[in-house]
Length: 519
Image (cartoon, rainbow, N blue to C red; front, side, top):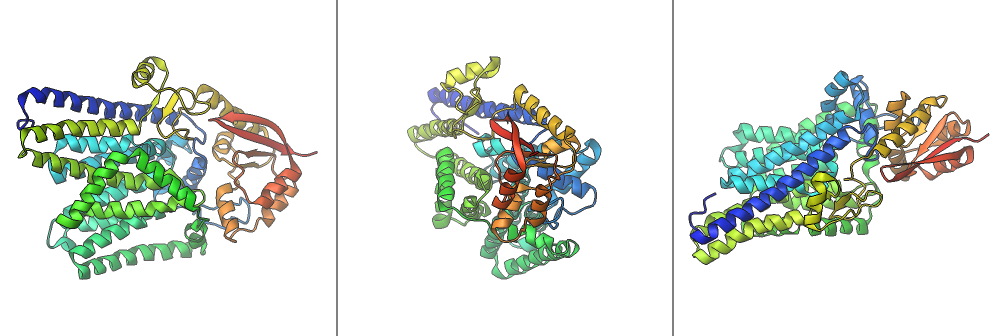
């Protein structure tokens, strides 16, 4: 990244600004690593539902499908495709059912996705600095930070999507793209993304749309081939699971939609990623009217539109991570392209741009700032930045997003609270009815129920809780552990009639209610 075209007296200022921008992004990366390390050491659910992802992995490790009739004991079924869990299976074989195994996989996937973003920008621009900034900006996003180190499949899906787009960009440079290994690699990666999480369908549509612009007939044939493979695999799994795969993966994911919720997430995402979003928008408009549309521009449009699904009941900020990855690529290419052209501009305009680029990344990093505010390392940094803790019970954590359920590090008190709940479950007679499975793994108890899945299936008319309520009426569960109470109303009513609260334990800012059978 040459500065030779700039006036000599301004070069040092530009270098200093770029160093400051790099330090800001690396500082956010340090916070990300620290957060991930804290979660690796926490053996319980940090985000509600992680324990069920671990249970899916355990079932796969035993050669069993998690897609089953949830209306019979243990009243459990998964609503996610299997690939993320299959990737995690070898870790479980070696280390047992540990929460950190899937968290390591998700965290590693986020790093690979960031590297792919950097590579995409570098390949398009040959600008190493902007490429590095683009990858680090993805990792600095609040959404990436919150979700990356979780036992969740979403970041692995984003990794496959990003790698697929990088491969497709390489294939698209050739006239005979349909014969290239890169094209087939992209289709394979998109297949992997779809069988990691259904949300990847938008990236598949973006890829096929891009190929259609390159050659309609060949794109249709490629799409038919991908559909045949994906459909054949779908039908096989549905057959061996006696139809529960279709019920769990498709029908159970058609949830109630809230327009206000989706609009709220759109406003939040734009507010947090405003500068890269504007740069990416400018690049998309430029390619639309003055150049050829790149696969990355098409991907961004589809990913941003697909984020509307964040309005579904039970959805959240994770639905924007793909759009964030696409925006980082497109904005990076836009910034690098303008920098390259500025070498021919008048000195004052070239200088203004050279000053604006590092300031853009500094300002963007400030928009997504999240930092711990106490301790010998973070305390001085927080004071320099003028921020203080703003996250409820966790006054040592600041997040520009405001209050978040994810981000604060679990403390010793949270570890102790989890151990106390697990001990109660361990000492309870018989199975334990728990809204989080992490306690059950620590207690050596079988996993019973998955509240959120039951609730959405009940709302869709796919779940009859009669057998579960019968066991509750018989007080067959030695203990009940509730947090958000995401269960069908009849189940909650049966629990209230047959179990009484005995204690409340606070962990990770949430109150866990412990119930025992009524006399």
